[in-house]
Length: 488
Image (tube, rainbow, N blue to C red):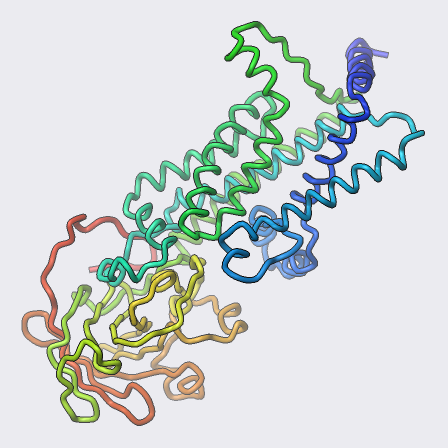
């Protein structure tokens, strides 16, 4: 027997002696609790995983897994305290399992707590690492919180849901968001290595707590997921707390004596290190490369990227509005006449009417096709309608589809092209299924635009948009970039 093996065996035996029955139950509790936190237990997750069409989708499913045994309906179940019910159920199951485990093994040989605790911490460390790195890439390639759109900058403050105000406040600063991304990726990397785990756990607990409490305060619905990493980070940090207290509070020397596995053959060590660095390679470099491709070369973002009408981006007053040949005067209570309009720099046209519409309270997710990207109108009221459009510049037509309508899930899932080719679909059954509109557009002096066409089967409009010259207090800001399109 080698000296290293003797040392390990002596340490393990001593560690077993030090763990009394009460602490053994605590270990068993955490063992079950952390496993239920880290390992997916829902059938839907595995069904989605096995439908993955690429390695990236597999990695994304692993990194983005969100634990939960039950879901509570209602506002508190989404944003409030009831959303933590699944954690409570997990704790009850873990406590019950720990006592049952202790009772069943009361006459058995004591378990090797040191080894079990070590590998449970490894599992938690790697789960934190891949999750926080995935979080970080969303900010490093700024796609999580885009700069506020023109229509959002012309939305009344009171029409915003709290989470949208918070997300747009972060979206105002490109470099702050990139810094957060670098911080999260760096903290995730620290979790891969034993010597830097304590520092990584401290950073992750602090950063993710800030995200968790901000989302809880602003109804962002991400508090549970970010709080999940806080819990795991604190669990990983528990081992180091006595040493931290000894050194930084009592200012005394501390000699760490933590269990580490002793690989009995070189082959086992090579296999372990090979698996470890392959894991790091996949989640740090390959995953990061795929995220870059999605952002810059595929356009799978929260914001649309197809360029809009040239030199039209801006905010417009409605100087004339004809419905079926009859001019409608401005009336702030009118639910038909437009109050204002916006052409975004990308292919979204927005108009405002005095009418209540259902509010989308999702955070918005990156999608391949511009028509289905909904971040720009989530979390806000105010009677705004968002229309995706494509341009036929030869005939001076815009082909438009209302983005607020409910699209078939199969249609959204299967689309991979950025554009919808609305002009071609207008002559097919797609015209009715997507409710495609065709409006004529004309350029007028002073940057004004005329739009004319049907808004449904029986009504037609003729609208003059007068461009408003303005400058936001924040200047031009920054915009999501990509390598597919250029913007004038």
